[in-house]
Image (cartoon, rainbow, N blue to C red; front, side, top):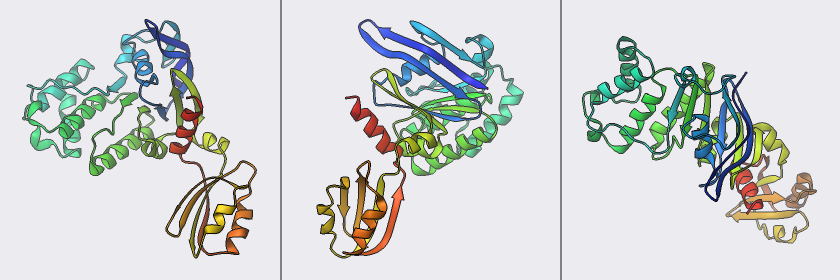
Length: 300
């Protein structure tokens, strides 16, 4: 089942095209990365999915039908621009936000205790939001996003400002939601985190989709043309391999090499063995970061 279906959607603001002819499908139970540089159109796309703004052209369906009030209660949304009612106590605030989504006080009370404990915030339950640090407020807002147990969770830059410990907690929670069959849309600049979490990605640049599909298939399309060599000896011979090497970063006893399209990694290994002692020779898949930079640079 496709949880979100977007067909030929466009949105313009006066003379600026924010999204142009976008089509994509987000399957149930997946983590879907919505990626792109600043100003690419990611947040505009999310706001159209949520019906905060309406597209000028095209259609959007959620759970197999156009957005409606029932569908809204099945969605949890963490916006990039964080904001809480600063003078409300955390427990009361979370209970209020849960009730807006149709969760009773009796049910939400248990959930609030559970989530505050998980993020080590239980001691702050009776504190006002403006007494919490920015990081604590961010965790509270994430709790408010998932407290009603939504089927579709939309996270816009959720890792921004997270310390490593809470970053790991958040990633684990996202994976737990996936295991429960929830669908997550993840918009982030952090390619390393997207690569670890996402099943599918859509790369948007300058309002248009430039890449869409499963992460594995996208990596396969871009080939395995990156080689890592750890060696002992003088690797100056690499400078003469211009017919094979497209790009190279060389460090102390370590080189990361991007091969030209028709170059054979085994041939490079044969040459290297004649000049240095090889400690490691590894053919790498291109990273999502490298694919991102390549695709965005091509469109500049």
